[in-house]
Image 1 (spheres, rainbow, N blue to C red):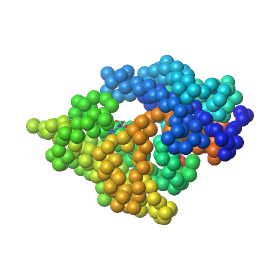
Image 2 (cartoon, rainbow, N blue to C red):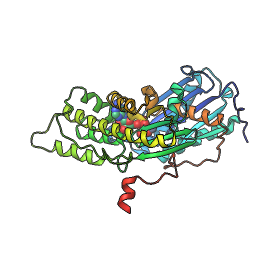
Image 3 (spheres, helix red, strand yellow):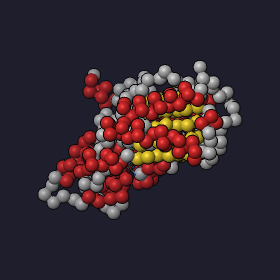
Image 4 (spheres, rainbow, N blue to C red):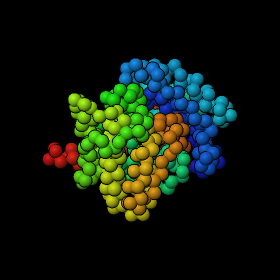
Length: 363
Ligand code: KG4
Ligand code: ZN
């Protein structure tokens, strides 16, 4: 078995590899440094231009592009960190969830590198990368409430410790980022949709188009966005449709309202397990949205929680959060997963009950 850095050792320099979707990313993080000095290199190569003609991510194109670019990006990250490969303490690679072809590319590269260097390999759950990113940027202490909003996920979790996540709510249909992307497509704003919708919304009237707030006020903290997407389509199908800016602003306001409501419910649920809860962390690509940050911060404050949101480059997919999660796992004695499989699906809380709404429908 490869040597593992001793717990509490001065340096935990981890190379992170991220290939689960359409960003090829490599980064080096020193887990023993203070906030602000931890990220030694953070290289991201977006494939957006390759997928744009298709209006979404094409898994085969993504996997092939990762194969083409990952080696170069890893070399660049280690160079930028001014380290040699021998000076790394471990390799951390995303092992899922995500597009399986891409996940395999990154995980196999990480394993090969770890085996060749005789260093531990940490197989990281991409969602854990997002979940712990606020500890990389802000040193937030456990436990905290996490609003994880990305292109593939929309969940509220109580983060109790590294590797210990309690899911309080999740989406019963689309992820919030997916709703942004589909709305952008309907508005002809292109791909990726989130930043385009946010930009269009800045000049629109959020009260112009009446849109639903799915599950708002319902017990629990699950989400649903497919009805909102349908309502946007119906608004645009009218004889004299509203402007793209008004639809974007109204859509964003509806999402903000729903997130605020669900956060309020989640805070009450989380306090039953963690009465001293003091922070809400907002992470994932959609957390880069400034309007949503403002509304969620207000909802958090009303629930006596301070909002922490990592900077946008740590919200979108990146390898620094994967390297950091690797460092956290090593520090807690977890990791060294040379035999870990690549997984398309990998819930953070495998024991979570199904969403309350879905369970209600079944009973
Ligand atoms: O976390 P991420 O980079 O990848 C996944 O793990 O899914 O999130 C990507 C998602 C996309 O749906 C993208 O449209 C959305 O995050 N996004 C945004 C913004 N920036 C990225 N959504 C709303 N507003 C933004 N500014
Ligand atoms: Zn992500």
